[in-house]
Image 1: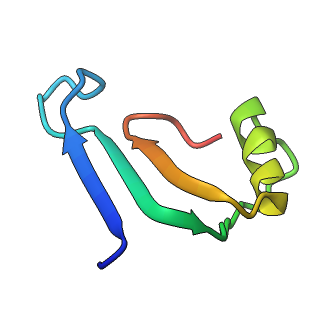
Image 2: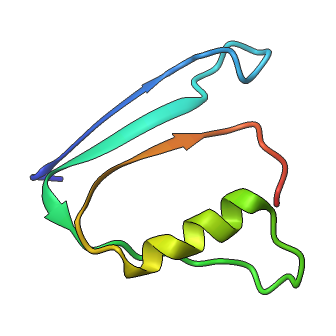
Length: 70
């Protein structure tokens, strides 16, 4: 997609050696949108992520795999 760049790699999270880490970067600040579970119990990363709803000048995200749902 024009205006966005991305890369992925294997950093050792998955034992199989398959890609497990990605970086997506916007060439300009952009608005974030997030969706969360309605579970009453939320891990610290989920609480931190909820704060992103009020930040409008994000430029990138890091995505990793191999985590339990929290």
